Length: 184
Image (cartoon, rainbow, N blue to C red; front, side, top):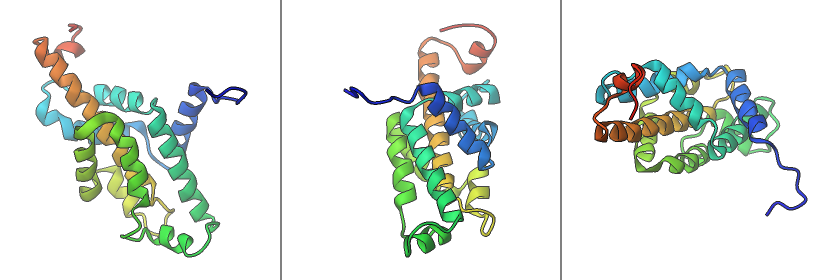
């Protein structure tokens, strides 16, 4: 496997992924706020810091990293007008029937199971928080792929928390207990 190939170290890919998000105006905390909004009704004591940790963990997964790097690159190439026609116009206008942006984001979501898949669908439809800002920045950059990728990261991070909630519940704990130093 990968004999003779120059493998890119995980730390390099993680840093590039975070840099791409920051370069495009997306902070980890922006995504964590969506995760918090999604999960706090089900998790007494859940903190924004725990949601940030969940987003950070998701951003260490290669599937998400690769999707983000490809999607951001395509948005940036489109901003420079360097895609061939008619793809350039389709990506620029974020044409409703395009679907490739959702397909890339959804492919990454599968890593975190059915909860992440259904949450992604909710976020794609309802455009919560920074997702809405990216989706409605018409004329201020192209975010055809990025809005869906942010929804993907948020859905995965929310799924992680949902699964952790179950583990904590089985141990007789809550997120508040974990925050206060109790361990499962």
